[in-house]
Image (cartoon, rainbow, N blue to C red; front, side, top):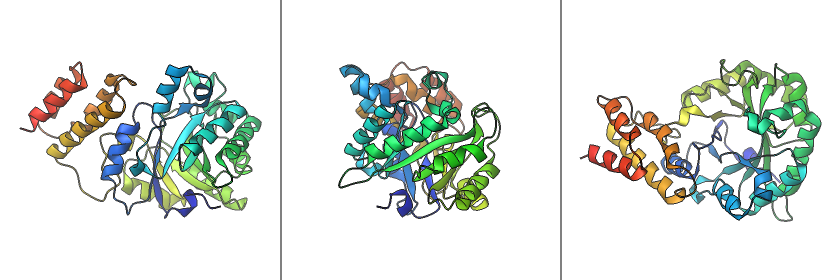
Length: 325
């Protein structure tokens, strides 16, 4: 049964899972503005499979919010992390039942609180466990009537470049896709992404006659940049992270948005946040978007300062509405 990944037109483009950024509010807005002719994939924020299996009722409600999505977002992938194969299988089964197109295992997050659990980039050091987790995810992803795609997002190594050792371990388990952040865990995002290692990943994949798709990640600014990087490396697609900030128009072929369009989009973003996430997520997380939207025109700095000083999203929305009058 072919995965949705293999049915995509290539090259394709993927929104990176970013905590408190690519939530259901922002993704809904991105989906609204996307040009349907441009093949794109959405990712949820990463979520703890352990928490989904063990949290109390209140904790469950909050975690399930991270797995909420709008029908316009398809194809959409849920990303979970755990070092427990039992929870991985159960998490994948839950995501399949929730209707996700794909399920991704986080093997690249460098956050200490994630690594302390043996998850994220710590799995690069335990390839046996990493492979066991992929097998567990595959079990949970499949039912008698449907197979949800399984992918892995990872890095080229932990303290040093270990791609030659690490990637074949993953490919041996035949995930549908490997998303490769072209830096080591030690490098975080402090050095330029080494896209030549994405090209090498494609060579390794081809030498092993693997059908797994390779998606590059790191320092992608926009669609034009993504296309250049894909062409240079022969990757199947590119994942875009920081390039999406303040840019729900990313998946279009249009020019730069006007001042009025930027302000209107931020108003809509605020309203979607209030609709979907108020009471579950601190409203202050929206402030990281203000700078990204409110930029590139005379008076933008002053408006941004006013927005940052607000104590509620309702106040911020009122200021924005007033600025359009």
